[in-house]
Structures are given as C-alpha cells and as structure tokens.
Length: 257
Image 1: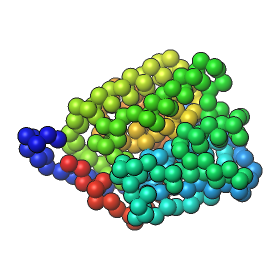
Image 2: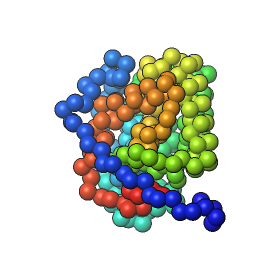
Image 3: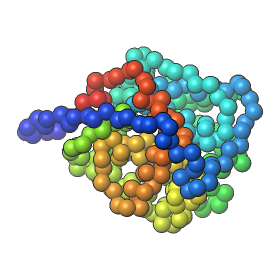
Image 4: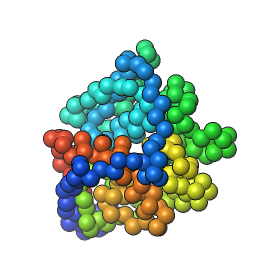
C-alpha cells in the first residue's frame, strides 16, 4: 500500500467449522490414491502450525502420498525460526524437515525428490519423461515464485474472509496459477494436475487451494473444481480437522488489511 492510499478497513475473518463425520471417504475421482507403505519406524517429520504453515502442509502431504510411516514432531509456533517462516520473514530449515534412515532432508522440493527415490512406486512424479519435466517445472515455480500472493493471502485454514480485496500484484500471481492449472487440467484430463493420480505438483499447490478457499478467490469453473477436489481429499480433511483444533493464534495472520 502506498503512502497516498487511505488505510483499508481490515477484512473480518469468519471462523471455519467442519463436520468430521461428513469427511469424504474416497478419492476425489472415485478411486483411493495409491498407497505404497514404507515399513519403517525411523521417520520423523518436523512441522509447525497446521493452520498457518503452507510448507508444513506440502511436506506432510508428500510423506503421506509416498506411504511413509512417520511420526510428526511439532515445532512451537512461538520459536523464532517457526514464527519467521509463518510470517514470511525468512525460510526455515526446521519445517518441514524429514529424518529417515539416518538421512536428514529439509526444503520441501528436496523432501519430495527424496521420497520419490525411496518410494518410486508411489508415483510422486509422472512416469512419462515429458510430463515429469513439466511437473518438476511447475513445482519449482511454486517453490520460488508467487511472493505477492503469499504475502497478501497467507494460509489460514480456520478463517473465511467474505470481502477481501486482492491487490494487483497478488492478482497477477493468481492469474499465473490459473494459467498453470488450466493448462495441466486440459492437457492431462484431471481431476488432478497430471491426471487421475496425485503427484508432487498437487502437494505443492494444495496450500494455494486452501488460500483460494479462505479468501473466496473467483476462479474459472475447471480451476474451481480442481480446488474443491483438493480440499475434499481425505488427507486434506485430516489436516484441516487438526488445524481447527489448534489453540495457537497469530494476530498478524488472523486480521488482514
């Protein structure tokens, strides 16, 4: 906001409630996602807030999609590193961080690539070379881009902003995401970005689906269906249920100007 612009009244967040008994029991396409269970008790995934941390959600989804049997280790949101990550002040090597068989992997893309190596049958990356390159490209773009949208529309699963002003720079990011989603859904047939199976790309864009829901972002019909398919996934419903029960609140992310 420039110095000449009058302050905008804060948008009011409407708390989200869900009925756990109403969670979808199957895959959004009618088929359960492939589960290739890695039989080991040596895995730990460090995450922070399930309500606010988009990077924690990405790493958690990747581990679940890989079939990894892991224990969650929560990093206190009041710790300096976790708070900096949630408020977009600095990246954190603490969350998400995967420890598995003596290997420690941080950074979400590195975690995804590692899981693809240890669980190749899980299909985290498409089997086709061209599709695999496309998947890696949009994952990388999500990983390094869209800073205006991240700052303007922080993840907040519990909230619903009914009248939210999206500024021009954030809208440009949203327009590019719509372009990516539309291209993938058209090219590979949906319901997910690379067809009928979840990939790393879906995990990377899952927090965006959550943001679009929280801030009531208008989307073309195909993109709205993809957003809804992601939000209705049993894995997403599990994460959302935990987020709704978290006691932590960050005032900076619960009142958006």
